[in-house]
Length: 324
Image 1 (spheres, rainbow, N blue to C red):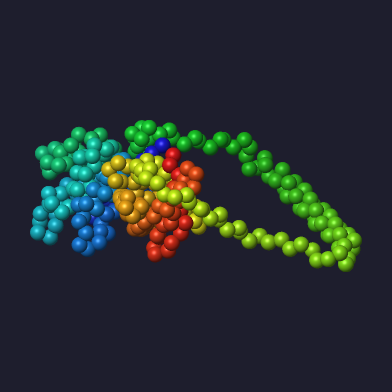
Image 2: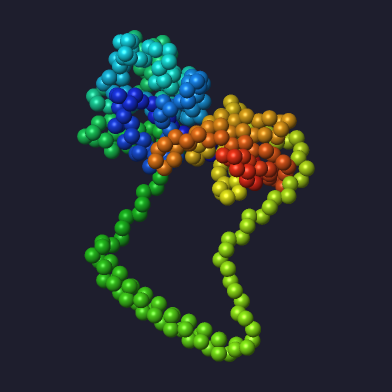
């Protein structure tokens, strides 16, 4: 199943507080699948291409609209929404052009902008059904948004936890009894262990040293690849296992975008060099966007798995790729 991601589009001066709260709530239901903020684009980068890549890797866009969203102006009193370099305009325009799910979210008593007040590339936004989110009923309103996304993605809501069968007060006597019995059991076990080892040491005097046990982790088995062949096709779903990092599921699309549970971006493959390069971004636990750059060199095969090495931050590690 393809992991479907969500992009949150907003203006800091218009709805920053709401954007953070909505991000936190959606991330609880769709963990590591929510992305926002393309304002940290490197100097000299083609921001239209960056937006197309990042929004292009998502399957739904949430457009947060406040009371000032439509009329916000720059230092020259020009409406930002009509500037060619306005990132909000390009984010929404890219999503509408891709015909993915676009949900306007109205905050601070904002109204949906009429079609005649929007640039031509955003005209279709006025026909998208909006959801109003208020402070007075925030949980209910965001719950409607979550249900809309679940419906658009074809996903079922997570099962509710089973109800508690007894109150804390009724469980308290049993808890105390369990603690008493547990403590008594541990004491008896300790006595038995002491007696056992005392007898063993007495019986084994002069019989040689006792074996030494180690809890040190065993090294990961090395992969011995067979000669490389020409049937490596990047498009598809892969389980990628990196030495020391564990494994994850990656979906490489035909339009040269990819996504996993925690990241998304673009990919390219150089057959002559057997080099698969992933350029993307991910959000850490603090909500900070991090660049992801990795180059996988395919060396050969081991059974149904392609094996090789990967460069991550200048460090070389073994890697295995298994197609699903």
